[in-house]
Amino acid sequence: MRFLLVSFILFVFAFSTSYGQDTITVKDKIFRLSEISGQYFISANYSETENINKMELKRGYFTIKTNINKVLSARYTQDITLDQEGSDAGNVEIRMKYLYLKAKVSFLKKFQDGHFIMGLSPRPWIDFEQKVNRYRVQSKMFIENVKIMSSADFGIMYEGLIGGKVDEEYQKNVNGSYPGKYGSFGTGVYNGGGYHATEENNNKTVEGRLSLRPFPGFMPGFQASYAFAFGKANLPANSSDFKMHLIYLSSESKFHTLAAQYYYGVGDTEGKYVNSRLVSQINEGYSIFGEIKLPKSNFSIVGRYDFFNSELSPNLQQKNIFGGIAYHFQKNKLMLNYEHEDVAGSIDHIYEIALEIKF
Image (cartoon, rainbow, N blue to C red):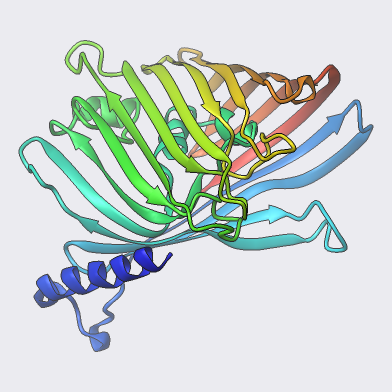
């Protein structure tokens, strides 16, 4: 952690010195507010196994972004959730999801547009996947859902676009996130335990993602991605390996989103998939996601299938089937969802009406 702290101080000093003439004085409001936004997932659901019918806050995010000068910007995001354990169960609790400084830095401006992020930062993979599968209201993404890793952590990341930007019509009508003409990338060094965990060892995790858009002219929606992570589980022993390899294919258009991924790895960030000797076990799995947007309407049909298996125990095998109908209005979604959950042969059927609110 000492390395990250020293790097952060040098990082801020270098960029604030180089671009000091572009900042605004305190009298003139040095932090110019550029964006306030929120995203909340509220649901009414029924579980057959638990025989519980409830309304709840599934998740919420409140974000403030500021421009400091032409190069530096900052982001603050609260993670709002419902406490499920202990004497505070049922209370809405708030913790940090993101708190970072971003600096625009392009090493090869003609070919690559990028930036550094330092602080409580997104990790390279899940942030990208959530820009393809925009149904976090239905479930967490596959890797996070089976607890291989979380979506954010303390660290340093560099990410960018490859070869300029894809056509503006595609960005406007299909997807404007990570719009690199030939793809995008991200790589970083993190504590490893995730944004909701304290650091239990002196190890750091190296993570990365490379997404290629091979046919930007006639198939801009097709991308092939590879993501990796290498480090140790966040355990005091500092001996349990964590390795992740993930291959991902995705296709997007005005009328559909399709994605498939295969995961193979050893252990996880928390130390869930280790044996009694703290030796990490081999895991693998896959996930298939699809959205069909019905023409001339605001409705979509959404489906997903996840399979996960660990050699540690058959009790950790997990299968999930998601299905739903979504109605889109403004930036929001109203969804009718169904989930078939099979954890080591224990089956649950969950029925849900979910609302995503964005502003």
